[in-house]
Image (tube, rainbow, N blue to C red; front, side, top):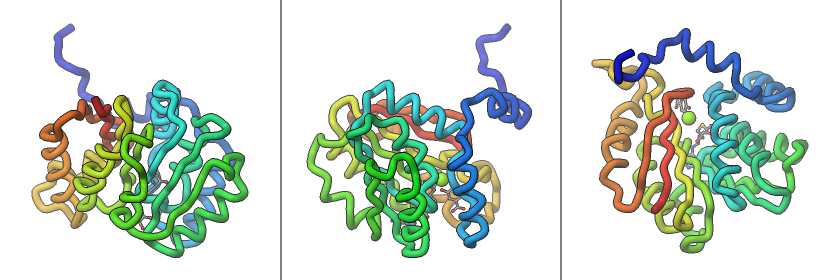
Length: 216
Ligand code: SAH
Ligand code: DHB
Ligand code: MG
């Protein structure tokens, strides 16, 4: 056995996915309804929700901020890993997405824990006080990530958790001429993260690549 890592293939992803805690009936129905409502099918993978939930429990997160709500899938998934008096603020720019998410949050088992804030990430993040938040999840416009991370490093408490989606740029990280216009922004963010003072971080190869970091 060499000291090199196993090259993770599509078969490995299918294998781990089949053995990971599932998202449950409500989130499956939410995804179906979102698709029928014409909302893009770009929520995080079930194994990301499982992993993020474990991380939130490990750091005993009570206050969480998300940028990029879409249909509320990841917000509901994460909120289930918070204590009953925990809170998750999720920020969404698109009014249609925010309205859909509000309805599905209201009907969920974690309605009391979630607040959907309509507007841009950069507009809402300054309201969170210094060192007052336990965890942040970035999953909105990729060009906004460096600014969101800068704010997060201010409002996270020491030991706070940073998570950011799509480190593998929608599967187009190594494409010579990618079709998605945000690939360049993802690459720039991936190169920026290691330069951020006071942050220890790793890309975890689940879903479309999940940045996981901790504020020292
Ligand atoms: N976290 C969700 C998926 C988010 S998809 C999940 O896993 O379930 C990205 C979302 O970010 C979209 O709904 C898009 O409208 C929103 N978005 C894009 N730019 C934004 C911005 N500047 N501020 C807040 N939300 C934004
Ligand atoms: C896209 C955005 C995401 O956050 C994601 O997880 C997948 C795709 C997109 O904009 O195409
Ligand atoms: Mg994403």
